[in-house]
Length: 457
Ligand SMILES: Cc1ncc(COP(=O)(O)O)c(C=O)c1O
Image (cartoon, rainbow, N blue to C red; front, side, top):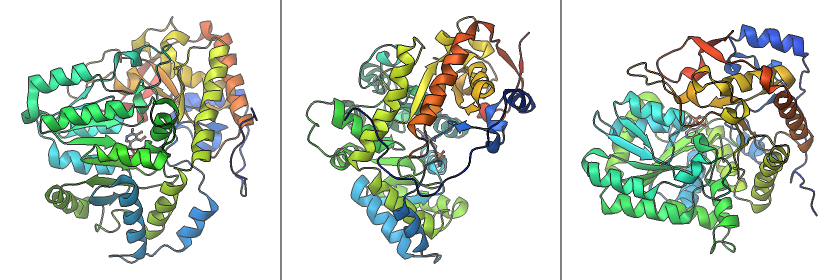
């Protein structure tokens, strides 16, 4: 069969309010041209993020009813811990309320003023948490990543030569952690190969540097390895996941992605002393080590979701449905990052709107137009997100200006995706009339969430 079907039935629905173009023009102006400032009910298709927006299964909802809300040592904690240990394999598991809390604790313990943390591409909260601790976050993604037209299957890979050079120059004295984000969200949602994970692990361990995975989308990454990396055709995603984590010393995880939960995360390590220091901070900021900022029912939902996300029928549907959108856009001649990543579609805003210079934020301008055109909400990943140095306030163009349309798991159907394709094409047809934006107000850190914009005349 060529038709991709959603491998689930819909049991409960949430109505979508349909708005007019005139209403949307007013609402985005009132939101100061920042889609984060819109009310969710004024959005028709919400592709702002795939984080915490998944549809949970009947199994996960049932498990939530079994949540043990005891303060310490709850049954739900043991179910959560045992599932994480079985799949991720690390000796120490520390629950947190979401991924950035895990990052904050990890970097709070390990990063100092002269610390350097390389990654393929740091996600915004990862970079901000390192910089907040005084460290320097360095992106070392492979050269293929910059070419949005290259169809190399593992564009999330680390640039091995660049990493070796950095390690030789700075050594374990300054490089406190080496990270890999699987898959590489800020770099187009591209996968990292097992060969690359193995190589980065070897470099880190030869130099005596701990190696961590940012594991938010580990199952999608495992499925890319299963489908595209020779030698893994017959290995189920769960065994691929175990092998990936086997090369690392720890991980940070947002359970809001590849475990279908609406909230949650965790931090893992094999180092018992480090875990003790991390738990001391956890108690101060998140909660007791057997719940870490989560309710027992959340721990239950995560435990179920971590198993479901590794089912091959789900992962096949997930990757194919994202590819469906990407390949249709490519056929229409619309600049889009290829090959398709797992969780999102990335428009190349610099090529979509070549008449808007990076410091007038083509990605933000495009995101605004998609909302006006059809009520589709998405996010800029470019100069607004990464172009400002929070310590000096200086601005420079980011490496790329992308617009990310993140697809919530099991939420939208193919007809919703056809609507999104039509909306993008309508904006593409009137692209010459779209103007850039300027920032009128922005905070020091993570400015894209709250910055205010106005149109450039
Ligand atoms: C790669 C990556 N790392 C870390 C995070 C942070 O996770 P959270 O939103 O749960 O704090 C995200 C969230 O989108 C992410 O995509």
